[in-house]
Structures are given as structure tokens and as C-alpha cells.
Amino acid sequence: MRVNIKSATLLAGMLLLNSPYVSAEENFAGWLFDFSRNKEVSPVTDKQYRTECGDCHFPYQPGLLPEKSWQKLLTEEALKDHFGDNAELGKDVLESVREYALANSADKSWHKRSRKIAGSTAGLEETPLRITEVRYIKRKHQELPEKMVKGNKGVKSLSFCDKCHTQAASGVYDQDTVLIPNFPDWND
Image 1 (tube, rainbow, N blue to C red):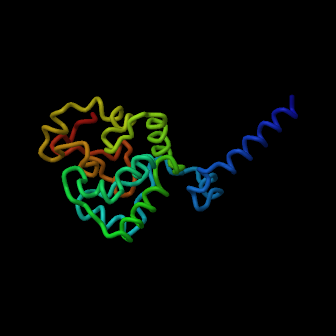
Image 2 (image 1 turned 180 degrees about the vertical axis):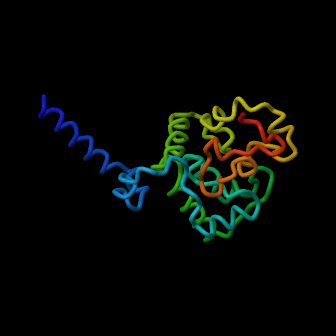
Image 3 (image 1 turned 90 degrees about the horizontal axis):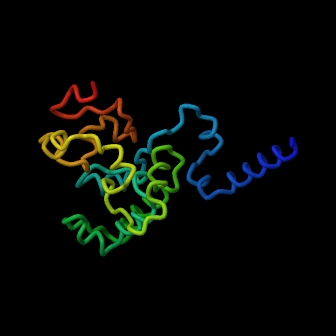
């Protein structure tokens, strides 16, 4: 019995270390032994991504969508009509932004919330193109009455993450960091 447990542990360790997800972390050992570790999503660290995306809207962390979503969103054709706007980028800029988003997508992240997002989108026939279409995100917001979001002039839509999530830019989406405009006592 003892040999089987050791063998199973060794096998699990080898599989984990050879996993493609290990490459998502620059310092896997540091991540593994950091007990305050990344339960949220990795903040945006790429200046060009932050600038190009952030010029028009909140620069969503790539860990909020799976790789297959970013593959569809970040093409020359898709950016010509990016949710009703022309968001075309130069070829080199697009390649850089796309590369960053794909490398940091939910399914390549070790961050807990990103892993939950990846799990909720795995195996879907239809690839979500909006963060608000992700099952995990929808479930987290399902109990909010419409008057707090669409009927709230300070929010307007769930797509404005940073309107309520006060630490969204840092990749923190915990409920205790939420402050809904015009509803200061929403969580009491």
C-alpha cells in the first residue's frame, strides 16, 4: 500500500510538472509555495496591451476568457467590427497584443478565478466572445437585480467591471472589494 501511495504521488507530481499549465507561470516553485497565492486573475502587465485595449474600454485581463475566445476576438477581421466599433490595429501591434492575450488566457493561468473560468468554458460548442457570456461570470452575478446594473446610471452593464469591482485593475474581483454605485449598502 505504501509503495502505491508513493508511486501515485510521484506520478501526479511528474504529470503536474510536465503539464502545459506549468509554463503559464514564470516561477512555478514560487507560485506553489506562495500561500497568499493568486486566487484572482493575473493583472495586465503588458504596456502595449493595456494601452491599445485601455484606450477604448477597461483593459480586461486575458485570464477572464479562454484562449479560444482571444483567438476569435483578436484577428484583423474581428477588430474591424469589435462589438460595433472599429478597433483595427497595425499588424505588428495586433500580433503583440494577441500573443500576450493568448499566453495569459484563462486556460493557461494558475490563478484560481481564471481556472474556474477556463473550467466553465471547456467543452462548449459556442466560444464566448464576451466576458459577460462566460457561465462562471453569469453565475457570480445572477442574484444582482437589474436595477443595480442596467438600471443604474453608475454601472449600465456588467461589461463595466471596474465600476463595481474597486480593485479590478489589479485583477481582484472578490466580493468584499465590490462597491456598487448608488447602492452603498447592497451587501448588508
